[in-house]
Amino acid sequence: MTSLNNQLLVRSLVAMPNNLSITKFQHTFSQSDKLDTIILAMRKGSDPHELSKKLQWQDFEIFASILIESFGYTFERNVVFSRPRVQIDVIGFYQKTALLIDCKHWMKIYDFNIAKFSLNQIRRASVFLDKRKEFDAAIPIILTLHEYSCNFFEKIPIVPISKFKEFLQNFPFYPDRLYLIQRK
Image 1 (cartoon, rainbow, N blue to C red):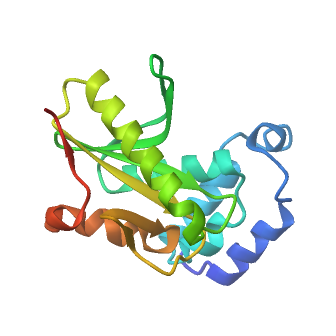
Image 2 (image 1 turned 30 degrees about the horizontal axis):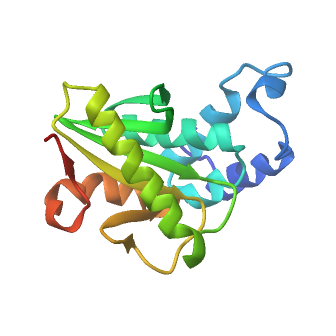
């Protein structure tokens, strides 16, 4: 395993069709084989952006969760609240702060829709804090497959998957740069 060729490993993902969901994939292999392969490639230094292009949107959310967990954070995925109805793709927990992550795998982010995505994520964060009293604060985040021309939209981080690990390492050092919603 130590002589594993990273590029060969990434190229092997091409053999797995993009329209192949984990559910369909598990009929041939175990449910986690594709993600295990991606995790192995990531640990061997492969680019997370290139790896994530081989995933469906559901898999992209799982991949984000795996990255969060690799930093020692706990997480929840596909969290739904009612009254008002809110769905959150991934939540990473850092001490008493929740990182609310909206995964945008399916498209590039453009200026005309970034405001909408950001406002929706702020709303989700507010609802989250109303429902989950054990947390003191929430940070809305947009995680993208593609690079975006700006890193923040009104203090909401727009993080490409290629820089997500760096973001997870460094965000606690820059709380003044982030849109932090605190319990009232």
